[in-house]
Image 1 (cartoon, rainbow, N blue to C red):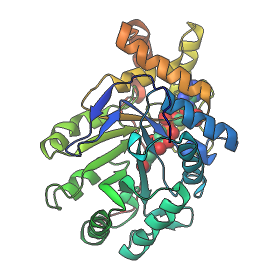
Image 2: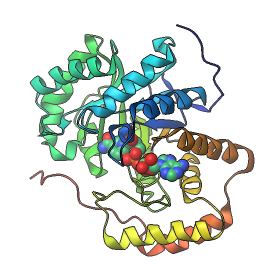
Image 3: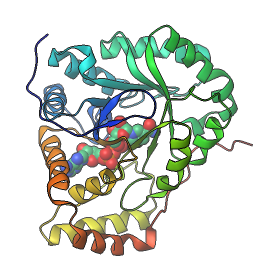
Length: 324
Ligand code: NAD
């Protein structure tokens, strides 16, 4: 191993884990070509640039690109040739290209498959992926106990749960002993168009649970190119985001910068996961972080964008199965 000169990025404590994660985390779903094709050389170069810029937290799942994201991230991390303790890796279990399976048997097998694809001996965080698609009672009584066993075996250091509806987090956390679930990962709920996660933060802090917030760009809606075909938002929400992006562009500003800075400004969120698929996206997003530290936000453009998004503020979409 050797060392790569690393720029400094703000590190934030993650709940009670003792981990210190970079304020911007690397979302690896785009490396699974889910937003468009990404070549292996570009994936490896993107991971390297992220690490070089001070990003130490990498998030993936066997679901992203049907295992492709894990494989690409594994190649990128290996190519860094730095000590394993220099970076933090989260992957997930229970959601696959073939469908959902939160059984103890499947998730126990899943971690071994993930470790092989990632070329790692352990992950730092293993999340149950999008638990609203499973029975929450099974998550509590079967999946999480299986993950605790994996924790004791050293295959993961910490346990997390992820999903879209916010009430899934309280449902599970109210039913497991304190310290069982170390972190939660929420997405599309702490950004310019939807900031509803903020109401849950005091509860999570009270339980010592670390907070990770993903998709500050609303899974691509808050970019100039717009979201992917499969994006679940309503046409109304999509067109409002498009109008906001166009407004920024007309002023010579970037909606991605504004949106990322908005999500980063709340320090109770330990890491904001943004999906990145090229060296230039990493450069742009890291520049946005540094600019936020130096100059603060562009309040004028933010107010204008908030006005455009006002009619769709906090609008979300259904996700998951009926739990009753
Ligand atoms: P995002 O909001 O981060 O948007 C990603 C899209 O924006 C990609 O197409 C990316 O290439 C593009 N982008 C990024 N920076 C850009 C820039 N500067 N200019 C132009 N385009 C730019 O959405 P996401 O990728 O879905 O979320 C981030 C990460 O969070 C994911 O990769 C994943 O790791 C994690 N996540 C997890 C869950 C879950 O567990 N259920 C759900 C959503 C996201």
